[in-house]
Amino acid sequence: MKPIILVLFLLGSSLAGPVLAQTASNPYPKTTPPVTIPPTTNPRVAELELALNQVQQEQQAVYQQFQMTQELRRNEIQENYPQAIQTPNSMMQAPYAMGGLKDNPPQSYDDNVRMQRERQERIEQYARDLNRLYSRYAELGEQKKVLLDQLMELTK
Image 1 (cartoon, helix red, strand yellow):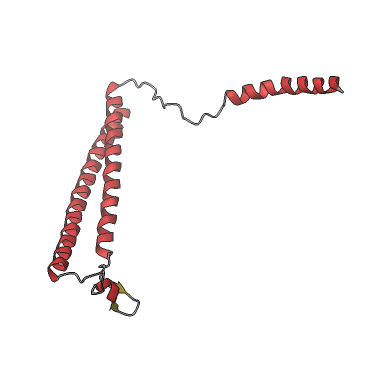
Image 2 (tube, rainbow, N blue to C red):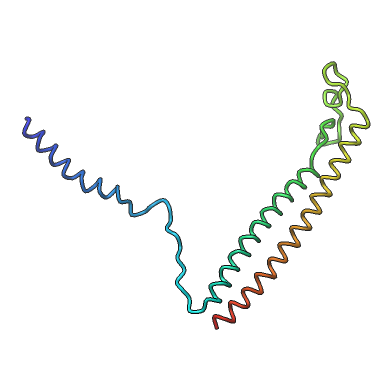
């Protein structure tokens, strides 16, 4: 009985060695190796490609900022005031939201006006930011177009 167990143990360990060696040298690593660009004959082409890559990255970042600002503005516009609850049929004032209960005093008129003014100023600031980001995105698009045209001329 012991020799059989010993043979099975040795057989199992001799098979496990190559399997462990295969798993240790994973043919599919989780990190990708850096991409190497083959050297071009014209150094100007490499410069243009680098500049184009930088413009594309900046344009992507501006686009993401534009999307975030647009969503902030949209949420600010759609925001319901805390003192009002919207029902499907009409706008209904809720006593607990309006104030007047023991632990929730009503907001003053001045506070409401100040909050509305601040909200409107935020909406206007978001609109200015959106215009600025849109202009920058278009400017980067023009730069990218010029770089692509130059690159196409060099590669002909």
